Structures are given as C-alpha cells and as structure tokens.
Image (cartoon, rainbow, N blue to C red; front, side):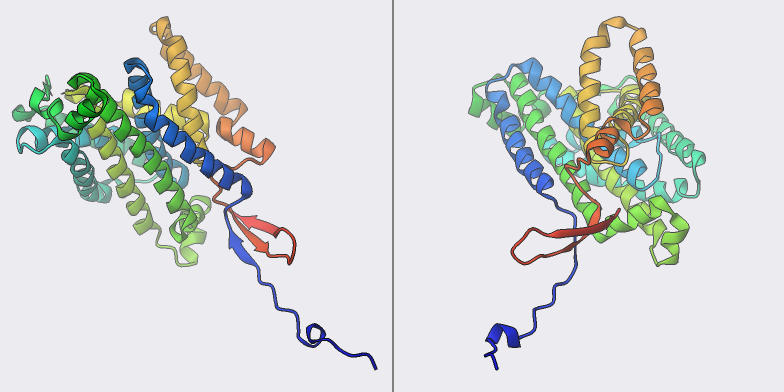
Length: 371
C-alpha cells in the first residue's frame, strides 16, 4: 500500500466566486489619471495665462457635465433646468461675500450646500412630473429663480453687479498664490481658480465613480433599466432619485459659484443662461457618450476643440454644433466613447460587476458580468 501524503489526505480548499469591477486596464488608467492630475497641477508654473483660463473652462464644464450625466445618464432624470443651480450657486456666493463679508473661498462650498438645501423643496415639486413634463418643469423652475433674483436690488437687480476688489484680489487664497508665484493679484486669481477647478473636476469624477460602484449605483442601474422591476426587489426609487438630484444640485451650485468668482461679474440672464449651462453641457454629454464616466471627459475635449476652430463662423457656429450633434446621435447613438467602448471593449472607469473565480497559480477567471 502506498503512503498517503498530508496533502492527499486534506481536501482542497474551496474556491468561491467574488464580485469585481476593477480590471488591469482600469488600474493602469487610475495611475495615469493621478499622474495627469499632478502634471496639470504644476502646469500654471510654466503655462501662459490664456491656457490657464481655457483649462479652467474645461474643468468647470467637465464638472457640470458629470453632474448632468449622473442625473440623466444614470438616474434617467433628463433635466433642462440645471442652469437654476449654476445661477443659485453664483448668486449665493455674491450674497455671502457682499452682504455677509465672507471670504469667497469659504463662500464657494457654502453656496453649494445652500443650493442643495434649496433643491429639497424644488425636488418635491418637479418630481411630481414625469418624462418630458419633468424636463419642462426643471426649466420653468430655473426661469422662476431668474425672475426672482432679478428683483433683488442688493444683488444688482436685472443689470447685475461685480464683486468688489477686496472680495476677489484680497482673498487669502489669491494672496497666497500671488506670494508663492510672484504674480499680480488678477493673474493669481486665475491660477487659484484653476487649481480649485482642477480639484473640483477630479473630485466630481471620483465621486460619481465611487457612487456608481456602490450598492446605490447598482440600484441606479436597476432603476434606469426597468423601474418597475427595481421596485419589485425593494429599491426605493423615489428616495434614490431625490438623493441623486440633490447631489447634482450641490455639485452644480459649487461649480457655478467658482465660475462666477473667477468672472467677478454676474447678471440674471448670464447666470441662468440655458444655452451656456444646460444646452452646452447636454451637447458635451451626448457627443461623448451619455451613461458613461468617460463620455463627458471626451465630450468636453471635443467641444473645446470645436469651439476654438468654429468660433470665427459667427452664427453658423451653433448650427454646425447642432449638425454635428445630430450626426453623432444618428451614427453613434451611444456617443463617441460608447462606440469606442463597444468596438474595443475599453472601460477606463468600469462599473460592470463581474463574477471572478480565483485560480491557484494563475490569473483570475471571469464568468459573465452584470451592469
């Protein structure tokens, strides 16, 4: 009789399937993203003021696009009134700075929180509507905010107002930036706003990604695919949608406050412009790919390049953008990134859940996936 070894006598350890979202490509993309953010953070040390201002626009539009995409692409709430929270965030910044004497850098996050608080009663109004009526309702709410703030004389009324010099150039962050880089106050404000916009864009992408990888993100996917089916398994669709609406209002209000701190001038028509803050954002998300995190990133790059090349065409500029949007929606219904992801199976920010079985001495084996 042959001798039995200890390994033969002991049963093999069971291997269990586990749920995973991260891939090797996403890990590499995460490292590359950190390197890119670090490089962008030091860019003002060598770049001109024009490039800094242009990248400020890119970062703020990316933050707005990610907030709108969270609403429409993942929660199925197609809003055409997000300019309401851009304007509210901006006006709350001016109110806190001019009337209360709060430093603008402190007032920016306060404006985002206040915008989210104001969004609570607003949500209970617009959430009584469905589909196209919801979209129209959000636009009507934005118009109401614009008309109300146009009557507030202390904030400039219908003609608007400018931030006083001591509220912009004398802010502690602007002064610290001026001392650090040896710049004049106006240029230092641009650099400080650039850094804040970079932090905001990176934070917005990270927040949306973390949310979509959580259990709430899985519930959002279920609601987007079939709300009745999600309700049947215990998902509280109303509470989750309201939560997403408030998160988007906070991010949009925060971004609006930062944009108008950099501009230092506000008026109701500019702050609540549907063209600047909703139509443009919608174009960016649709071109890039709605319902993906990568889509708005690609979309804002494409939009910025088109804006630089087509700005000299005058009124034809908007027509050409509209024609391009129609062509992309016709040829690539999932957007440019959706087309790339579908053809090459590329997912830099994967949110699909896959069943993975660890294999001893080898790489993990994958079994299917759930969106």
